[in-house]
Length: 140
Image (cartoon, rainbow, N blue to C red; front, side, top):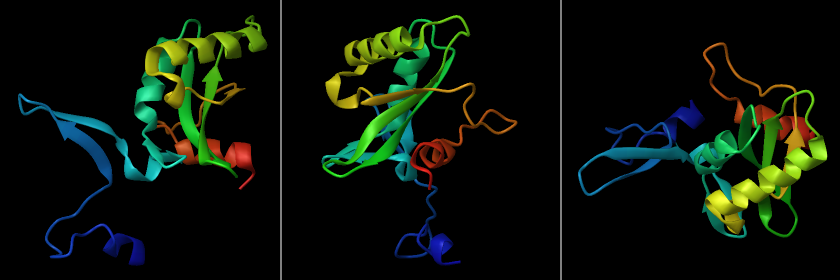
């Protein structure tokens, strides 16, 4: 009940699910992510959806997702988990994925840590459980 109460505005008439987005000049709404998934790195709010798109376009990456990991200096850093072909060289894949992301989204959004996983945690409907990645790599 307490968490649900925070999803209503001051009037109690409007409810939000925490989606973030913008409306372009033509009136189209573009969703950029969820507030709960926001990575705060050095005071900069980073939404992982844009990084996810770069990971999906990276050569030989089968699946990928960005998430935040705790960092003593920056609050959080951008991390990524990727699924690669069985015969791929993991070190080469990590390097090429970082290089690709740097070109696609710039240095600030490029993952500082990349992990190789067998599969990403997803629901039967394909929804990514980003919080499970955080748990997997922080142990919490």
